[in-house]
Length: 613
Ligand code: ARG
Image (cartoon, rainbow, N blue to C red; front, side):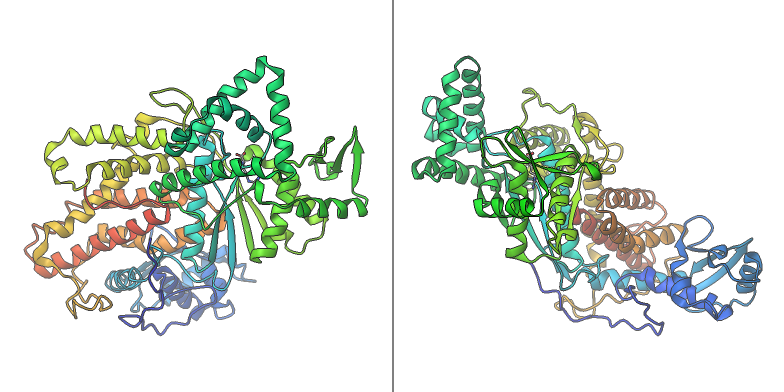
């Protein structure tokens, strides 16, 4: 994705006279502005409460009003909460931002003035969607990460083994986290830490002599190496000498034997090439392809020596271990009896090297919850080693995917998943020949819908939950699925195609992409408008929460809520049939803004919003 500058001039200058509270972004997040307005009303009556404190107590609501405040939370000495609520309500004077207030017991409910609200929300979206960062519109985001660097390690499959669905989850969640951080101003570094070292490479070397084919390797290294691995593993179960040879070969690799390494490097390179291609289709990319092989022996042994000096190492049957039982993390083996390097020690060394090289402010590991203990162990060991940056490491874990298989069987590769999802979608699309013929690239489109289906299924629930992989449910257009979401976006996109006479909305100077839209929004009066605007305005909060919890599910839920609100608005807010041209334009603006925001949320989730399908 191309990145465009983020420093573009603000087209319609933001002109609010309200104070800007710390940590709020009123010119980018409309609700920050309106919450401040609510806080001012309360502050006027209760000056002993600070604006900031009141602001924190302003919640968004749907039924009783746009905003609510629970007075008891302020614990005002000597005043009953319902009395203070009543006082605020009785001395209320409507203003540009807030139109009404209602006190119900100790609660206050405020409503925004719809005309101002509509103008500000739509203008903010108009202004902010011009500013994209690597394809992700800035609306909804803020600069909280400015000047900070995050390294996120995700996907991390093992060469010559299956790219299983667990790796796919890491890939999907990791790319979301990269997009999220980037959008919030962080400098990001995406890293794939390949399982590209270990005994299996000795086996593959032996197997390759017998079963390997250069041609197959070039065609699809990932599958071919896996096939070789499976076959030789099979041989090894009946023939002891295979394992001996494999062991010997891996020893040569660890000792730096050039001919053994040369071959291994070729396998690695071909595999990475293939991965790159598959990730590309998923809208995923990595700044660095690292891997277990890249961790130097020195970085692995130095920390062990230090642990030894600190008296933290004990020996058991020739193996060295660190006792972490007082933290309920068991005893961690850091060196095997035969002296070969192991996964844990490599992770310790890798973290040290990464800090030295990148000096990150935060490093996130997106690794399955099955490895909770492993990750907790090396985090703990790094902190015992007193690295000052050890506290900057975070583990983002996730649950299992159950019941995954394709029409071909249960050994599933990423390739197969993408292909199967696209094929099924393609068959579906062909069922509607009219629409089908209007789609420029049916294969690409069906693939995108299929990938959306897989990703949405994955990100719809909290990441720690397990879920069942279910082709027919995820590929359905009914219910909260990926295809439904793409459909909702396509329908919004069709609004512009169906109403060319109302376009362009930006009349100031259409050739200048930075000119702002200037449409009178006073004709937008329906409750449905308020509902949609409220959703659009809440998007920055959704992003903020996602950032706090590292959860994509909130963004997915937001997408569905917005899509549902839109789909129930087509009739009440008709554009095509509206004889009042200025109202039709205002409505179109609302719908196109909804498209921008839905598209922004989808991009954040690493989806490619479609224009047609
Ligand atoms: N390659 C590992 C696996 O497939 C995952 C690596 C996770 N990252 C790490 N730094 N240990 O199980």
